[in-house]
Image 1 (cartoon, chains in turn purple, red):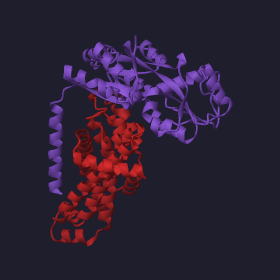
Image 2 (tube, chains in turn green, red):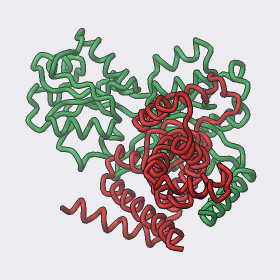
Image 3 (cartoon, rainbow over the protein chains, first blue to last red):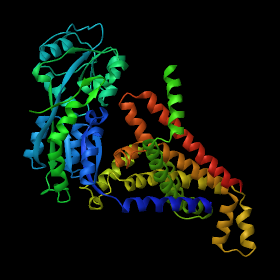
Image 4 (cartoon, rainbow over the protein chains, first blue to last red):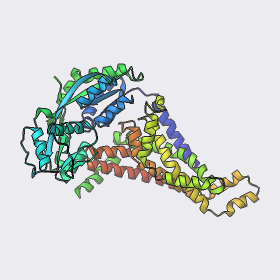
Length: 266
Length: 228
């Protein structure tokens, strides 16, 4: 018993020593789509090297990322739900919102396409058909950016989705794609996650290209006046970096399976 | 079948290639769980011991309470501490949320009832002549209790191992309070959850096998100490 205790104490001393030498940390709450695609991993190292800091990434849904910003538990948020971002700034929780990049949403469907919407240009009409056919639709149901957009699309189609064809899963994008594939249903996804899951699901793209499927990402600093502990100098540098030339090149050159996932904002 | 085979192969590769990121993750899991179980033992063993050796008012209620706490879901502990440690919570100024310390706190809450209950069971099941004999031989109550603890050391060890197993295998507390930050609070289990959400099922399962290998080594180590 004593030996083990000694060992554990040694371990804890080791751990404390590590944290004493720590560099400055910046906390970034972002969405699972940017982290799961591997983009964030690509973007951070040059910034961390120049500024001798470490960016702690907390990857959650857009809704939760915004909540973490409101409570001041992070310094910066990088999210994709414009309406919520604007509200976040207007309510005084965030300052200096900037466009970073965009990609797009796509509607995925099973091979048989039971609602008959493949190739449809009008996403609202497609949503209407899914509802009319009562084809299975798997919703994120988690207050994420994708979920927010999905609800906007339903309301554009004047539909309140309900019934046993509408499944609210409450899970991440990848899990929802898998679930929709297993249940032969439709779902709304960002293109990046779909590309990452392409060979794990029988789902195919049925609707794409509608301007209402445009998916912009914005970066916002948590208001340092409301939360004085926010690292505003390092945060500002990070936002400059993210919207600067070097990061723009990295974003444009980022490929997954040979395809470009994100486009920089003009 | 190939999914399982791939995972196994990948696990072997991960273990023997000493991949830096995997090592960091293993290390995070190990030291947070170790510190947590140490603290939980420091609280849980005395509690279990006094429950088994003393008689006091409210004892039955305390035992029932401890038994019930064993059913405490990890996400509830996570939520509770999240509310306390968030910037808007009562201890927000300590900025502990999303640090290893927050995870350790949660794991201590998780493991303490387990350790206390197991130790209590071991002590209650011991020959009750041990303490009586020690007392007649002139030991103080404290010394007698320690003698009893010595006698039931295998039970105590089982308590510690059970608690350790629970904290190293849990994902709710680590995810909510640690935030799955790469290099800082990413543990074996949150890494598995992340890989699963990315659809890297084989990689996730192989990390699970690595976790089991780590647990095996820890238990072999404990076994070694027990033998001595």
